[in-house]
Image (tube, rainbow, N blue to C red; front, side, top):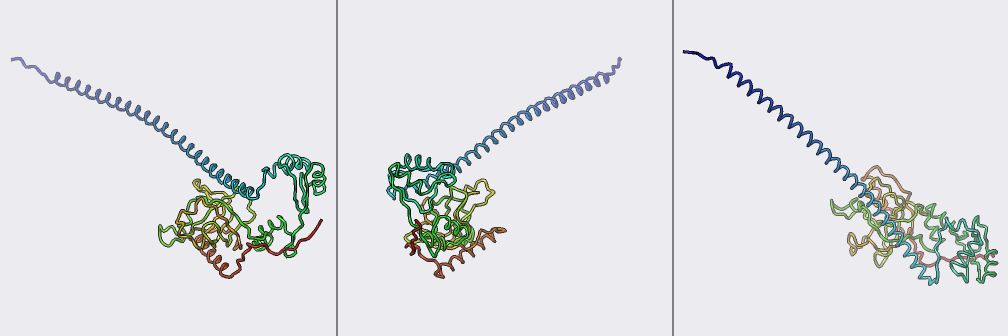
Length: 352
């Protein structure tokens, strides 16, 4: 009998199988790593592309929001121009010539003003001016120059008498001074009517209606009528007791804030604008919550309650608005609100 030892052969087969297994395992690991790296690269590229698209979309959204704000501003300016055009048409003027006061009139010589604006632009035949009228660069032109030019170029020139109220000569400077000082009664006496701001009611963020609401979600708090200004320097500013015309058959008492609306919210279309925000003390039920938007209203500023104030939070703001409403109601109840629909008696003074 011959004995053959097969153990070395079996061990060799086992060793080869182990080597093949580990080599396959290593190859699988390398393949997995390669796939993972490749997929990671693809994900990185996809992420970069998506980030690029997101950045583009954000820039486009911001551009569109800016365009929306510009369109809203242009719409306000167009509506203001239409209102002015209607006023001009009501006076039945045959021709009008808009000029940019600071850019054109302030730089024009008196002769250029007469020739370009009065003669060529307006085709003037009769010119009525104030008794202290000055015109042209550095106020060089006066009534005598205008009268001489009228005689030479075929149009008549006349001067108005001055008016006095309580010993004070009525003038735009006196009106602006009264408005700047917050003396609305003096301004109304000079104008013969209350100082008035009119315009279309525009949308805001509608946050005021949630302040002081009767219940959560009722939206019946301090809702406001927003009027935008096309310029940055209103003649008056602060908190006022007002009368609102245009929402019903009779004017509505209210309280209004006139000033620049501060905001850090990029979605606030009225942020940084000069705004008249008016809260009616008696809101007409017929209007509902949205019925005032787009309407043309006229707001009479009757009495200044105080300058604009800063509040620490919404609770303090709500309490401040509630106090302003109470003060406005007290003003109207006191009988101090006077009607200036008729012209106050004035004395004439001939300074010619």
